[in-house]
Length: 462
Ligand SMILES: Nc1nc2c(c(=O)[nH]1)N(C=O)[C@@H](CNc1ccc(C(=O)N[C@@H](CCC(=O)O)C(=O)O)cc1)CN2
Ligand SMILES: Nc1nc2c(ncn2[C@@H]2O[C@H](COP(=O)(O)OP(=O)(O)OP(=O)(O)O)[C@@H](O)[C@H]2O)c(=O)[nH]1
Image 1 (cartoon, rainbow, N blue to C red):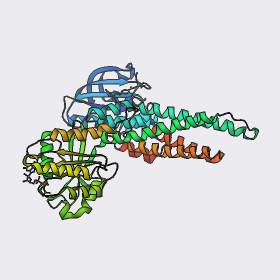
Image 2 (image 1 turned 60 degrees about the vertical axis):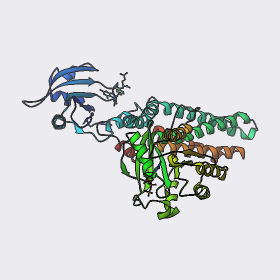
Image 3 (image 1 turned 90 degrees about the horizontal axis):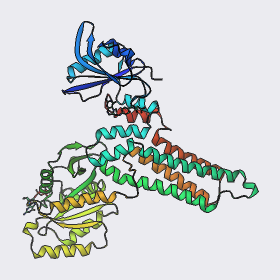
Image 4 (image 1 turned 120 degrees about the vertical axis):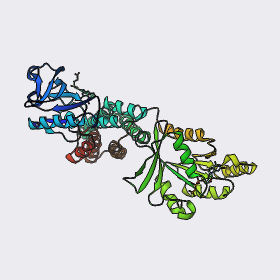
């Protein structure tokens, strides 16, 4: 199937003590051997390392170590070699050039992992986990990716598939004998099985809220009147965290984001593009722009002070933008200047917003750095609150999330069909889809476009 022998730099493209070039495919050993002066690699035992030189005719290019891995117990399941050389990008280029002249071709991004998948060593969710583990920047995302790489999702999906297949056979048995009025499948057992499947799917779907926050960060809108202290607060937070301050033009939305890592989680402070100057205030741009920012956010930080606003005004704004899945943190800023008036202000505000859940009020001084720890705790608590103790598998991948949602939909339709007495075709139809959607996650059902999408995002050499 994969007749080509591919090669690529597996290490970062820069200066390092060593670099590694990986070669994989039916001619991996022969190609490498042609460029190698040392032991004859064609007779090498699998999983052995050999000292020698990469040569181009009479020219010695570098002193290297070559590892030999024979199919099928290799990363790609194909014959492979790894050349470790002195880590200069120039040498890497020379070695790759010699290899391609001797029968290999340059690998495309993700092609080694794609082969591991195509050859059945790993499933699609595990291949995606490899990309995730390379991208992981903190413990939470590393742990989730590692669990996925070890087959966490694979196992979970195969249990669900098993349950769905069990259900199918129970139903089919009954349908076969429908005319004889025999009830093979006890109704309660059937319903219990369906409920269990639905519940498991629902909890996997739900885990994406946390998984997505860990992997992609949490969007935060920071809103307040002019001079409420928004910039001061952001600066205080940024300094404290020695944050990666990056202005990233949003790819999906027309937004600019400032990313702040707090205890390993990325918080994305949303700014709608084009309104980033000081006119970006609820007064100047109107409530409309504020609404857009808040609509794109999971958390709203609303800053006010007691000198320039009233509890009624703040409460009215919050009520207007409120939604169940929005965490609102009211930040009474300039606490260093605060008086008794401030106490009354907050009491009034609290009672005005009694009916709204998910609203917290904190007193801070952005400038004097008071209450900042409490604010960070609020942000972190929000993320921790998304975690579900019942789940050890956490969905972080949009593609998996969508497939699970569709599968859940189908299972719910099966439930409906069952409760309204069986319709053979309808049941079979929905069950087939529920199974197929699950199969998309492992890659059992897939197509070139999906695969191309996934693997093109990998680095070259992976
Ligand atoms: N030098 C080197 N280090 C590396 C890799 C590599 O390819 N080369 N990896 C690449 O990502 C990662 C390790 N992952 C790997 C996963 C599977 C196999 C593999 O050969 N699996 C075979 C044989 C297992 C065995 O010997 O028991 C198999 O599963 O059949 C190798 C590496 C990280 N470190
Ligand atoms: N006393 C005191 N002053 C503060 C505090 N936080 C901000 N300020 C001051 O309030 C003024 C406005 O602060 P900014 O951070 O620029 O306010 P902003 O909300 O970003 O204002 P705009 O950019 O106009 O929307 C500045 O003079 C700050 O020094 C605080 O905690 N205490």
